[in-house]
Amino acid sequence: MIVSMNNVVAHKAVAAYMDKSKQAGGEPVCAFIYDLRALREHAERCVRELPDGCQLFYAMKANPDEQFLKCLAPIVHGFEAASIGEIRKVRKVAPHIPVIFGGPGKKDSEIAEALDRNVTLLHAESIHELRRISMLASERDIAASILLRVNVRSVLPEATLTMAGRPTQFGIDEAELPDAIRLAQSLPNVVLEGFHLHSISNNLDARLHALLIATYWQRVKDWSRTFGLSIKYVNVGGGFGISYTDPDRQFEWPVFTHELQQVLAEHRMPGVQLLCEPGRYIAAACGYYAVEVTDIKRNHGKNFAIIRGGSHHFRLPGSWQHSHPFEIIPVEHWPYPFPRTALYDSEITVAGELCTPKDVLAREVKVDRLRIGDVLLFQFAGAYGWTISSHDFLSHAHPEHIYLEDDMD
Ligand SMILES: *Cc1c(COP(=O)(O)O)cnc(C)c1O
Image 1 (cartoon, rainbow, N blue to C red):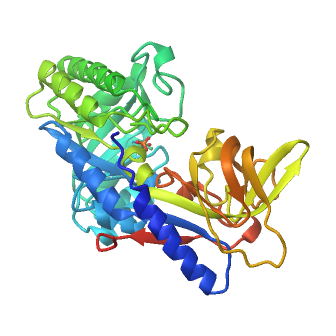
Image 2: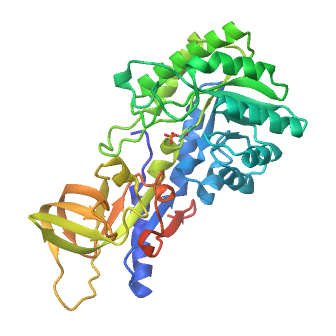
Image 3: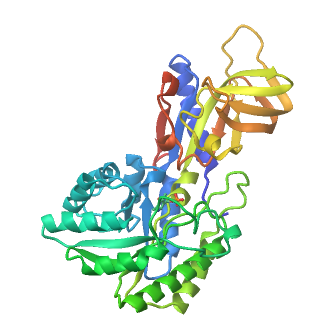
């Protein structure tokens, strides 16, 4: 088991939170719970196990929560930010930490402010962007360090990958790369420091990931030779997966780092650092979404549990169309003077409080027992959870955000 999950800690936190909220007048439980100790330990391990010459940048779009950034800043080599808003968030907690600025739609004002805020590297996502970076750097009388983001063609057999080598809005088509490299070489105010090749998402296969990096590395060597480049970085992106539907089958980080070691030994490029920028893999397992069951009903032969909360807080299961894993935390407290509805050995669909049939977090999941008033603890809610959701759709109250620190038992 690679991704650390300390459910015991989350359980205790939910129990404490339920006590508190019941005493306070009994609004149903609805909270994100973040285990910062687990986050710290997991990130430390990921960084520690990387081979020499590799750096880990946290892709903060996975979860830009200030507590996450504070927790991670002393551990990671830097942060990958995709907007000026993200850069400001990093600079607030870590004024001097290395920052990579990526993303396909950088405005002039964002590039300018990023340069003023001493961003370490900018990913140029297009030829037009490259020109604008150089222009804005020249206005400041500096040279901007850039990586060209390449949208590679057919990296590996198509079927094995989810995102590589197909038309997307990201990066510069490999077919246009020679033009982009020549342009970068000719522009006075950019320094071409290397390449960025994030082209895969949620990959669960550690060996495949190392193999992908081997092909990237080969490509970069070819480009460097062809254009006489002396580069400093190859950014291999993120995309290390989390298995939501089969939680026991996780991406094996030690296998990846071991294979990566071989890849780097084989493709040695002196003085070149490998950067990676995982988001999901760092943050997912450290967050939980705890929601109270507010109703149970049977409709057209199917059982439904309605929760306080839903896809406006946690859109991930709906957008991925999967049944998100949860466990049931029994709650004995029952405040009503009439009997409590319970289901035994049944299949249940978990729906949120929104007035849309899309607000479903898990479908036809077998449960031993579920009662109105029990709490569902959704796992792997630390990445692409709250941050990707439409918080104000239907104007329900926001969930609480609870942070478990080192000093909690
Ligand atoms: C989203 C993103 C990442 C992080 O991806 P994960 O799947 O969360 O690891 C890294 N790099 C870039 C450029 C991204 O857009």
